[in-house]
Image 1 (cartoon, protein in one colour):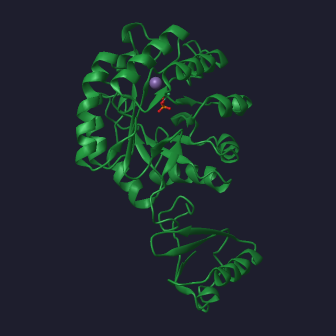
Image 2 (cartoon, protein in one colour; image 1 turned 45 degrees about the horizontal axis):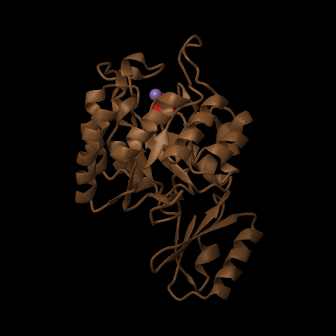
Image 3 (cartoon, helix red, strand yellow; image 1 turned 30 degrees about the vertical axis):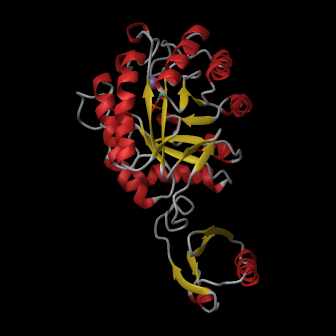
Amino acid sequence: MILVLKRGATEHQKEELIKHIEGMGLKAHVSVGEGTTIIGLVGDTSKLSSFTFSSYEIVDNVLRVTEPFKQANRMFKPDDTIIDVCGRKVGQGYFVVISGPCSVESEEQIVGIARELKKAGASFLRGGAYKPRTSPYSFQGLGLEGLDYLKTAKQETGLPIVSEIMSTDVLDRFIEDVDIIQVGARNMQNFVLLRELGRTNKPILLKRGLSATYQEWLMSAEYILSEGNKNVILCERGIRTFENYTRNTLDISAVLAIKKLSHLPVIVDPSHGSGKPWMVGPLSKAAVACGADGVIIEVHNNPKCALSDGEQSITPEQYAEILPKIKKYVEIEDKQLEV
Ligand code: PEP
Ligand code: MN
């Protein structure tokens, strides 16, 4: 349930109302926008009558949120969420380019790529230290050693780090060393992990599950938000369809749908979304045109020898060619590239 307050409601009147809400065992989620203040009621409101609150003088309107996602819902917070990560803004009006190899393979590799990305213009460095592989015999990532190398790459270039977490036993190290913690598609519904991340205040990049609906995806975001962490960034990375020419089918309309349903930032992963390096540039431009807040692109110095996802990775040279084009599109959208 949502209470839209009248302009001019005093702090004292708001406090009284919030006290009433909390006295009913509910949480009051206050969102102050331009000109309007909204109070979202979190908890079981199914048996509540809207008259309970419409009698308050300061309440202009009482709305029911029919969707099961509440805090992720745009009705709860009409203004776009902007998340500040190491001085770079993610969300409305800003555009970020996260790039780097699928896996961290050595210190030399990650530092070398990071330097090239920094030179070409990147907002964040990505690199997997823990890899969710289909086969247990495939390269599983360097683990904590990989995080050490990412830290070195950050020291050398100043690029903040994005890396995927797979288990809560290394959460302390991720909180220490990683700037945006990625939850991969395969863990989108690992609710234990999501709850645990919700108890931190780290920015979380929540990728869409392989066959998740928008609602399921937003409910996963809700797990993080409901524990108190409001720093959630969503990432469309392609879904499973009958089409097998591409690795996945990039659902570009997801950006538009999620932006309508939610206030959370949304970015696009054209690398996993297509599996084809030659699609990465055009799909990135499509992402900008659809209102995405950023892209995450896999870049490898030697894709043929990459230990994971080499077939979809672009080279630093290709990246340096693509980036100025993305930048032009970002300018057309009146957004600022955060580098
Ligand atoms: C990745 O980013 O390398 C990755 C494994 O992504 P996803 O979870 O989207 O498959
Ligand atoms: Mn990958």
